[in-house]
Image 1 (cartoon, helix red, strand yellow):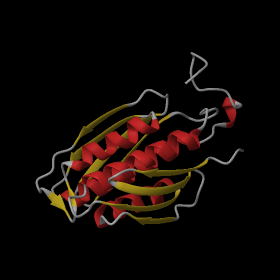
Image 2 (cartoon, rainbow, N blue to C red; image 1 turned 120 degrees about the vertical axis):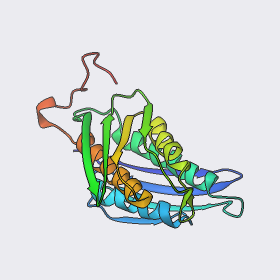
Image 3 (cartoon, rainbow, N blue to C red; image 1 turned 30 degrees about the vertical axis):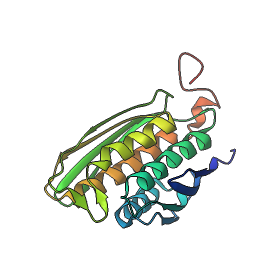
Image 4 (cartoon, rainbow, N blue to C red; image 1 turned 180 degrees about the vertical axis):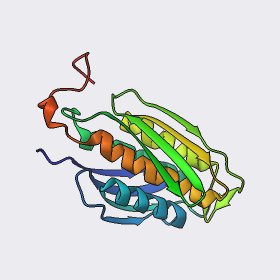
Length: 197
């Protein structure tokens, strides 16, 4: 099997980011964005998806977290797309339900190359640590669109916002792992009746 890895570097007037991803890893991560809660969520995502992930990001956190968080997720999406390559032999679609104490989240993914993102989640607090909860939808959208993935996320219920977001990222990691898996029955073919993704 070809190595499904990617390395992304992106420098703008607002951020400087380097990221490496191995889709067929062991869940090892080394994430440093300067935004503690985002680091926590991306570490969980890697662990539960069994992805090896390394991120170093610096940005204009003296303004707020928006640019650094957004650009990190843009780079993550690009890395997923690059690592998937032509997407031959992948399962393509998958979903995962993950509970986190009183919260339950669903993530459903189609890696068919058509980017879309739907997030149904209500938060009651404006921030979790240094990350605004209004950023959660946007960060998931940024990954999905740059990964050329269809991502649907729903928090079915929950009270604690930390638990809700944690359940989302764990479900996202597990669903992506399942959708990106190689199915030997496909014999390196593209999983589409159109013949291309």
